[in-house]
Length: 153
Image (tube, rainbow, N blue to C red; front, side, top):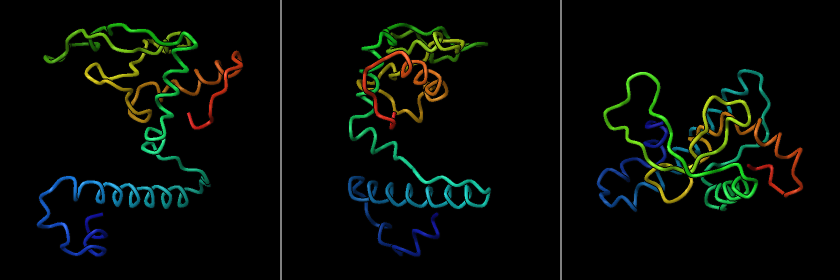
């Protein structure tokens, strides 16, 4: 990736100290470059995948917020405190109220956080443990609810 960036931009970013000036364009380049690599890998594996959705675009468009609200409207969220991690609890773990998804209603072993305990907004779907249970949860709720929900969830 660094080679591709250097080939494209040369030393353009070497002396830029303003984070607001260099982080957004390099983030965009990195995401684009990584998606190209993912698509090439999928093609090499014989996987044809035509629709790719940006997590950032979903978050920026309010889709994550809308999905969390929808889950709450369906009675699938609550504010609670998770148990400490299994085994030895990390030194920095402390019980904190968090917005939780009722993943146990869909066969998961524990309910999963939808918000970081220190965050004001929802965490992104790709980093959320709900991603692992989302397909089951959405399938069940789609089949029992008349509420509209976008496939982008």
